[in-house]
Amino acid sequence: MKKVICLIEDLNSGGAERQLTGLAVLLKEAGYDVEVWTYYPGDFYLPTLLEADVKYRYIRDAQSKVMRIPVLYNELRKISPDTVIAYLDTACLVACVIKALRLKFNLIVSERNTTQQLSFRERIKFFLYRYANHIVPNSYTQAEFIKEHYPRLSDKLTCITNFVDIDKFKTESEYISPVGKPLRILTVARVMPQKNVLNYIHAIKKVVDRGGKIKVDWYGQAFDGSYYEQCRDMIKVYNMEDIFQFYPPESDIITKYQTADLFCLPSYYEGFPNVVCEAMCCGLPILCSNVCDNTMIVSNRQNGLLCDPHDSNDIANKIIEFIDMGTVSRQKMKLLSRQRAVKIFSKEAFACKWRYII
Image (cartoon, rainbow, N blue to C red; front, side, top):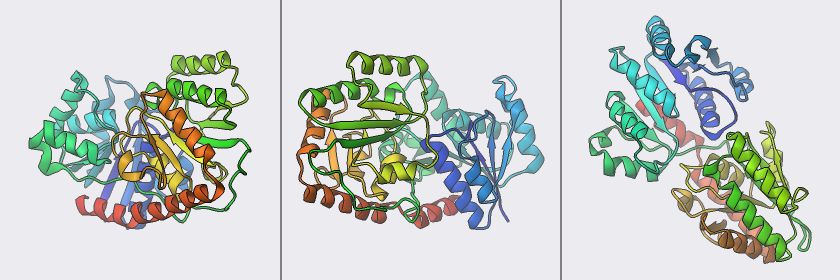
């Protein structure tokens, strides 16, 4: 039985954490001896691991940046895993350095976002990827970026997009808010500049000023405290406290998907957005930015609408367009979202690709 270590900073709410948790469960079901390791506290997804009988270790001594590499090196040396799978940049960097120190294991690093600029940190990361056996972007956009800028890494690439449990995330009700009633818009994402929250708030204000009846619920961690306060202040300035509300991460997020009318993700950039996949599985029409792999998931005016994230007028116009749709058109979008999700987000194909490189 192959021993697999899944390494990530923490298990706080987030798309990467959710996908790693799902991967660990699938590998456990496939007969692998799997452990999930973190070095920061955060256990939002821990119940899912425990329910599936997946081993979990919180390695407190590795919190220190100075001690992280030697501590994790020693822990890995003790158990000699066959494969280490690292998720998110910091864990990937640490795993590459440990592999460079001549520990023998199959190293898989997973790219969870799209590179916007080649900062010094990004250049160091791609330099260290020479020690990885496999590089797994979760978006075709990032895979193409790596091929273009680091062709020597091309042979290591295997693009594996996100999966969703389509039996768990599903449409429970055919209910749609009657035309004329407030439109229920849902977002599930961390509150941070990448997610374009401030511009989205401007767009919502424009919708309200044009007579649009809406209710916006945003579920997610306040990842950047000062930015979160800016967003809250802007909502107060616009007198929209009853219209636009933030909520902490919700463990039972499926019911939120199932009782919304429209899912919106206005990010400036993404990888392969997990929450869009989940919303589609629950039969939600999607409004998302026309960036990265979003255009591969959402077909404009079929299962959703695409917008320019830099243009609050365009975001507002697309929301108004959806409000003005009749019940029949909205229902058609719901059905197409679910159908497209079932076709694209297969956990069987996802697990098969991972098993091939493990």
